[in-house]
Length: 546
Image 1 (tube, rainbow, N blue to C red):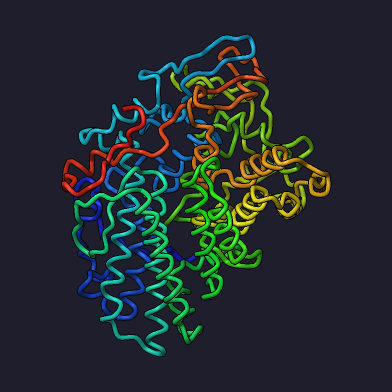
Image 2 (image 1 turned 120 degrees about the vertical axis):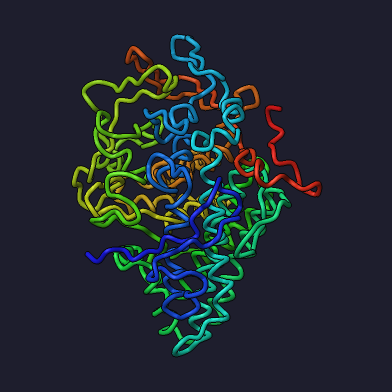
C-alpha cells in the first residue's frame, strides 16, 4: 500500500499554547508557507496541517500515540467504558470513582490521594508537569489543529489553481473551516473557557466562555457549509478532496464526501454540539426542536463520513494501538485498556453484539490497588470479533481492518434524533429508530417499538443503546456528564444497580458508584504560564469544587 504522504509542519516549539508556533520545515518536499502557495503545495499543506499537526504531532506526545489514543482515551475512561492499567499521564487515576458501595454494604473509597478526581486534576495542573498533566493534551492537539486550518485559509485566496479555481478554493475552505469547527467543538465541550484565534501565526489572551467557543464551532461549521454551497464544479472539488484524504481512508464509510454529504455531516456535528453540552434536565423544548431539525437533515445511512484506518507503516494510526478500540482489543492480559463491567451490563440479554465482541475470561482481571475501586473486570474485547454473520465488530487489530470514526456517523445521528423524539413526546418514533439501529448492527433483539413503553423505559432503552453502539468513539464522558451520572450521589448523580468486581474477585450486582467527576476542565496551566489571561477574560477555572 502506498505510504501516507503527510507533512511534518506547524511543529509546536514549546508548551502547546493556542498556537504561537510557526512553520519550521527544512525539507523542500515539505512546503513552508512560502512554497505552499501553489495548488499542489497547498493541498499537501491542507493534508499535513490537519492529519499530522492536528492529530499526531504535539510536544510531549502522550503515551498511546496521538489524539485518539490519549485525549479520546481519557473520555472513554471517564465515561466508564474502559479502565487503564498504565499510570502514564494519570490514566489510572482519571476514571477512579470517589467511592463505591458494594452489595454487602462495604464502602470502598478511591485508593489514591486525592480522593476526588477534581482535586487530582487541579493538583497536577501545573506548568512543570507538562506531559503528566491530563488537561494539557486535548487543548494542545485542538489548538494545533486550529492553527493548521488557519494557515490553509491564509493562503487559499492567494494561490493559483487550474480548472475551476473557485470550486477548488471552496473545497479547501470547507476543509479548513470544518476542522476549525471540530477543534472548537472539542475545546468547548471539555474546557471551562477557551480562546478564539483566526491568526495563522500567534494567538491572543482573551479567554471566552465555553458557550462562546461552541458558538464559534457552529459558526465555522456554517462557513464550511457556505463554501460547499459555492462549489460549482463537483469534479474539481472532488479532485482536491480526493488528494487531501489519504487513499487508504477512502474505504468503507470513508470516501470523498459530496458537498451535500458534507453538509449533512455538519448538521450532525451541530446537533452533537447542542446535545452534549446541555444536561438532559436543562434541555428546553426549543433546544430539542433544534436537535430534531438538525438530525433529520444529518448523516444518512449511505453518506460518507470522516474516517481513519491503519496501514502497514502506521502513518496515522496503528492497527494495534493509538485508538481506544485497538488498545482494548485482546485478552485482559494483553490489552492496554480493560473493558468496563458497566459497558457489558448495558447490553441486553441475547444481544448478538455482546456475543460477537466480548468474551468472559476464566479469571477476573484484578488490577493493582491504585487502579481504582471499579477497575476489575471479567471481560475482554475479542480481536476481530467471534465471526457471527451480519453482526458489527467493535475491535480488529489487523492492518486496515478497523474503521475509526473521526467525527460523527449515521448511527450517532440516528440515536441523537431518537433521544430528541423520545423527550418531546414521540416515544414510538424514537423506539423505531432504536430498533432500526439494532437491526443494522445485527443485534438480533426483539423490537421495542409498539410495546407501549412508558417514557422512563424508553429513555433507558436509549441510554443503554448509546452505550452499546458508540463505545471507543470519545462520546462516553459527554453522555455521562449530560445524564448527570458523573455528579455526586448527594446531588442525584452516580450509578445505582451497577455490576462491580472487587479485589477478591467477588461480583456485586447492585453496587452504587459515586464518580463525582469534574464536568468541564480548567484551562491548562501550560497555556496560562505563557499566555496570561487578559483582564477582559472570563474565569479560566471551573468554580466547581473551589
